Image (tube, rainbow, N blue to C red; front, top):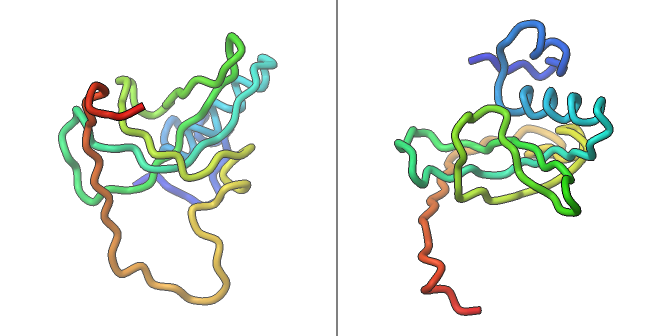
Length: 124
């Protein structure tokens, strides 16, 4: 695993390794250098249309404001994906941590299922 709690966007760029959080920070940095509004997003990226890989985990991606609306971009996955479940949006990961607690804690279980829904079956 290439995750470090202290890695920066510059380190992800120089080292060419990282996790989704690192690449999201790097992409936000590039966008902001070009005066393109961008924000960090964390949540769950479903396994719809791709092979299921256990254990499932949270994910990070970015949203960029282009043409008057926000668009999602995932700098880690080079293939468009569906089934994103947004948990939080912010300037960076420090703005929207996956957990913010005081004292010891133990995660005993974590499981999320995502299913594709036929748009014609959804009521307006």
